Structures are given as C-alpha cells and as structure tokens.
Length: 64
Length: 304
Image 1 (spheres, rainbow over the protein chains, first blue to last red):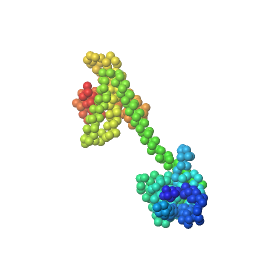
Image 2: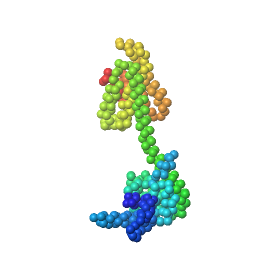
Image 3: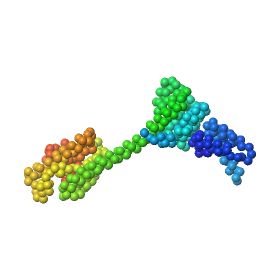
C-alpha cells in the first residue's frame, strides 16, 4: 500500500482498501482502518501514508 | 499510429484540489489509463519523483503552489520537461490561457469540462508524445544507417579502383591513414582550423580511397604497362583525374544537393596538382589547390 501512496495511485489503493474491508476482524474494525479508507477515498494520500506508517510502527512494536 | 494498448499503458496524473473534479476525471479516465492523483502542487512534484507520469492534467488555482509554478518547475528540469501538461482550470480569460501555453503547456481546458472531450484530448496528446519520443530514436537510427551506407559506398568504389590496378596493394589503406594523421595534426593550426573540423576530417578520410577512381577509365595497356609510359600514354594516364571527377559528379547529381561525394570528387580532381603549379590537370598553384587535394598529394607521393 505504501508504494501506491507514494506514487499517489488511487485505483490500486481503492482495490487494496476493498480487500482490507473484506477481511474479518477479531473485533470491531480498528478506527485507523476506517480513517485510512476515508482518506484514500478522498485522495488524501499524504495523510493516509502517515496512518500507514503509524500502523506499521505499532505492528513492529507488538511483534517485539 | 501507435497501437492502442501502448497508449492505454500510459499514466495520467490529475492535480486538482477539488474532490468532485477528481472523481469525474477518475471515472472518465480510470478504465483507459493508469492514474496518479494529488490535491496540491507540492504533493504532485513529490509523487512525480516516485513515478513519472506520461501526461499531467493540472489545475491552476490550488492552495500553496499554484499550477503555473508546478508547470514552471517541471519545464525547468531536464528529467520532467518532456511531460505534456494540460491545464484544466476555471480561469477562462485569454491571458490566463496565453500564460499557461507560454509556460510550455500543450493544451488548456476550461471548467466546466466535458469528460469525454478531456479523454479525447488526453489520448491525442499521449499519441503525440509517443511520436515525439520515438522520433528521436528513429532519426538516430536513420543517421547511423546513412553513415554506414556512405562508408560502404565509398569503400566499395575504392576497392573497385584497387582491383583495377593491383600494383597499388595496400596503398589505399595506407594513404587513408596518412591523411588522417596529417589532418589531425593540422586541425588546431590557425590556417586550417575552420576547414578541418572532426566532421570534415572523417569525410576526408572516408573519401581518400577514391582518389584514383578515375583509373578505371584508363585502358589496360597503359594502366598496367610495366615500362615507362610514352608522352602520349602519359597524357592519357593524366586523364584519370578528370575521369574520376566526372564519374563522381554524375553520382553527385543523382544524389542531389550537398553530397558526401563532393569531397571525393575534389580529391580525385586535384590530387595530382603541385604546389609550384607543375601538376595536372589544371596546373593549380599553392593555395589554389584545395586542402583535400594537397593532403592527398602528400600522402600519395609519400607512399609511392
């Protein structure tokens, strides 16, 4: 996803977002994912990239 | 015309700060092209650094850097100046359009726009870009082919003269090399600098093998005579310079204009002239003899 955000490519991003939204989550869909979807739909890729970076950082932290 | 699939693999960047405009353009272009979308100038420049689009649809009035400035920056950079920019704007005054085109934009579309029309114009511009991109390669390849054809033509004609007079074995190749050495040495001299640039030297060297091409017109009993020539025979032999000039002139006329054979003709006609005026066919003196003929004469006599 990050590479498409850097290149500002809306169509692959919308496809990826649809895939993410199609996943079954253990609880409610995390608010960051909802925000990410909203930002991508509105072409706000810089802000979306910041959220992806945050998610990736927290993911790395969890796996330690 | 380029095949459609090549055009469809192109990437179009949309730069507009209004979401609904982007939605319309994504809807109109998304099934035909790869798209990049940014909502301001700075983000557009950043995205271009990651992926170079084939065409940019650029709004003018945006927060921060406006479309004119984005265009100016892209045209100032050698890497991005070839990307066609189409302004897509609500600014409909003639001077706005003139400014955009002066900055290097290829087209100017005013809002409200018709999506099918934008799509058609995008496609036209992408086809033009493909032509431009390929034209340079095409010219380079054609130039290479032309140079090769010239070289082969000159070489084969020179070989013809050598076959006719086998006594000369290796003479053509050696004199060609002597000419190159002499010309390279003289090219920085103030007297010759304007006449002996790299292109002229290359043509001179390629043309040198034709200096005795006129010998194909001299009868065998004179050309191949082992003994000393009589005065009359020598007069006939001397005609090889004019024969050479005439046969090359015929080819030159067929080629028309400024032919690569003109240097060869000059050499064939003047390489037997002498600085003191005792040469032939015209008895030219000193600087009257063209530099090509002088160099050939030196190389020819040195190798004799």
